[in-house]
Amino acid sequence: MRDLLWFDPSAEATAPDRVLSHPDPVERARAAQKRHLPKRFWKEVAVEATDAGFRLLLDGRSVKTPLKRELCLPSADVAEAVAEEWRAQETHLDPATMPVTRIAHSVIDAVVDRRDEVAADALKYAGSDLLCYRAEAPDRLVARQSEGWDPLLDWIDEAHGARLLVVEGVVHVAQDGDAIHALRARVDGLDPWALAGLHVVTTLTGSFVLALALLEGRLDRDAAWTLAHIDDTWSAELWGRDAEAEARLAARRLEFDAAARLMDR
Image (cartoon, rainbow, N blue to C red; front, side, top):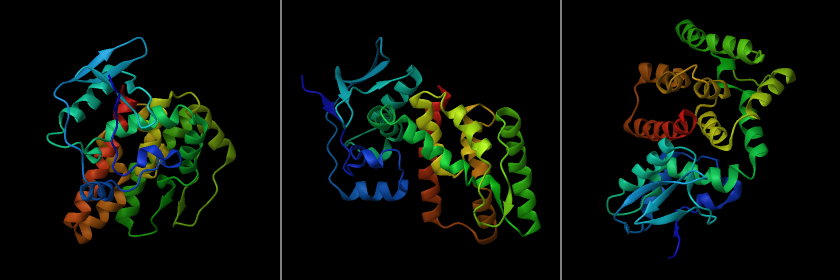
């Protein structure tokens, strides 16, 4: 039987230099809607346990990634999340609605082979972490940032020996090399799936610290998401948030939750 290959109308997953670079989910969804999407061609979705992990089966046939590797997931929970995305495709296959599947493909086709590169890219965010750049005013926003972010910076120092510098404004300040080295040692111990989840959450939030806190159970998803959007929430309270901004935020949250599934397993 022929392999069932992943269909991605944007061809994003097939470009090695773009795997795990995450353009805006709303724009990706809009682009996908403009293209012809293939019709659903399967009836049954199942998960099969193997010695290598958990395979996704469509009508009994295994699914392949864009690079024609078997879509084999690391845990029953992640496999079921992928299976649910395939079951949810009603009439057409729309990759924009399948974030866990997309990230799984990225892990298998890219992260496994380019682990050091992905780790280094995630660590770049530690050098300019969201939590380290604070508002100068107004006082209420300054207090809100301090209350939410200071405990996490204390935690990462105590837990990992990484004291990160905090500044006011947006002018870049280089972090201490020893602090970044300590964080690299933590990242080097991650398997490709956890690393991929860490990378996606880091890029979505702009904070390596928040991503690591989520990975280690220091924060749950809602808390990490809330802390990543203190500034946005403040602006919305003052000026309101339009429908497009809400849709964009909701799409990013789906991507965030999908990545968190890889770290929760």
